[in-house]
Amino acid sequence: MTKRTVYATVFLLELVTAGVNGVVTCLRVARRHGLSERYLSLIASALARAGLVRANRGPTGGFRLARPATDISMADILQASDGWPHGDLRVAVPGTDPAAREVLQKTWESIIEAVRTEMEKIRLSDLANLYRAKSEAAALDFQI
Image (tube, rainbow, N blue to C red):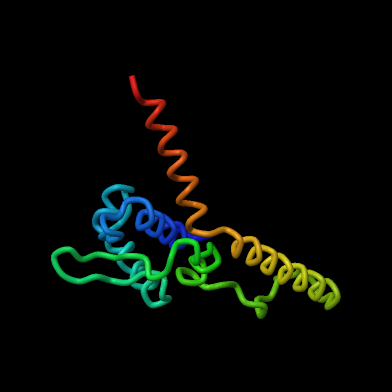
């Protein structure tokens, strides 16, 4: 997972958990998490192109989810931010043994598919619930 996917996930998590009327600006997320606003804006645009967020213009503008958090999977986020590795990726196998190359290529493709399947199961709403629970526990620990 690249920095781009991590930023996208943080941005979407912020939309679910901290948005006023579900709207959050890139500036707010960047300041809150210590991220580059410019880079985050590029990622927000990619998320909008993928149909995960919508941009609201004007004085109360920002971004909001385009779909319910229960309908957005980690696979959707990865696809929107980085794209999936494709089956045409070739494994660099030393030597000239075609059987070794084929076995490793098939293994690589199986791993990619297993990761995709698992990421489809994890929803943005699941992350938001975990985040809220962790935040509430941290707040309770902080009270005097």
